[in-house]
Image 1 (cartoon, rainbow, N blue to C red):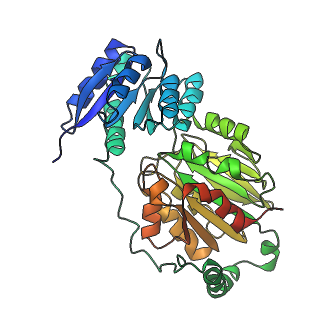
Image 2 (cartoon, one colour):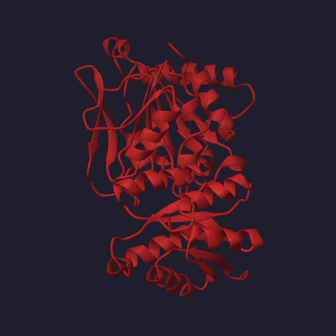
Image 3 (tube, one colour):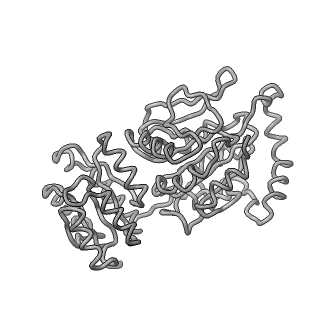
Length: 377
């Protein structure tokens, strides 16, 4: 085994520094290389040796230089670091956390409200799991989706010809399952899934989409309750297309992005000719609320002319099983982010290895691929 990973702990609370340091040093994979009381002290440590730390655990609200200012300085100086935000769940904290993720923070762990709660097992597990992912020592990609069903032979250069062949051979079987009256109301849908690295990646996709996109977008980003509203508001500020946190009962409109609520599960149903979003508080699946598999499964057999599935950066393999089920019943086109531009090449890797991907593109080309596929009105 390689040497222990060096971690920098940054927090203005001596108690939290001690607690987080104890969690890290009790795990044989990591060691606390340094501790800092604020962003200024941390920035001094980092600039002395930019290669020293494998990951940084960073508080947001600190004197002298806060977490956001620290990340802004790193960005300004073009210094790459794997930074994990340790943030409270307060509403004002949600906006700050989203800003940190936008500035390139790897991920965040919610800090419990009290020191007593911080000593519980779930906080320890989250710190270690996120550190493991950030330092590359603990990224588990589930194997359950491999060798499942026929592979799509659509990753060759001639996308148009291949797509046409797929529609000729597969579409009649699928479309015969619905009568003409149902098909008349069918439209296009984009269903997007992402996790670790997603908030930053989405800034390279959603703001590039036009307001007159000829599809609605359902978006699952793994986040706890309280954060997705801030993410939606921020993306809405930056975009021509409308972005909102999905609400139970929302009627789907094209030219709108609906972000699944953190802590809930999002599905699509059809009522009285309208496509309607349902948001339900229910148990997590594979530890995920929202879960992309659930969103994709809810689309199976729906009478859309086209469903474009997009899988961006993220740990694990959420989305693949749902897309596999969707592929068996619907006319779908799958776009996956390439490895080079992913923060974590997990979710796009698993869906590609399952043979479900039509097109692999770098992050900066994802919006263009979506527009090309669904068009504008």
